Length: 138
Image: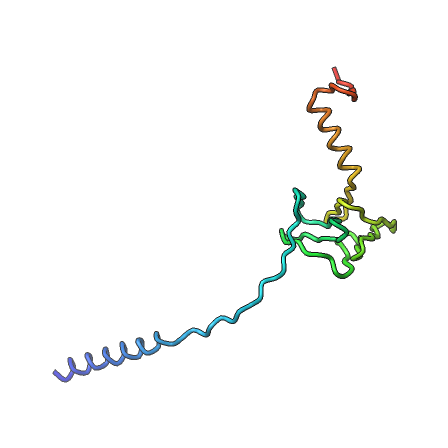
């Protein structure tokens, strides 16, 4: 009888200790202000890189776009200033114009280059019809 009483008492005390530990409160999370996001409008779709839009230099990294506020150096040594001036890795200097894009690896794509690519793609799509004639290989 004493053995049974002491086993029951031990079990009750063990359960009471476990129940007391399970009732501790978790510390409340503190509020964090969300980071400011800039959304590029009008169909400009760009992965990661730098674009000149409405006179502002915008940087997109991991899908988040924000205005460039301080000079940034890319992995290949290209330096970008907040006013849109770019010093390439080879030392040449370029000023970004509206719509010019620069990848984070340092490759510059101007609006003129993009227009040329679009016109070549349109000509190839139309089968060479129109003003532009393309040579075909036999």
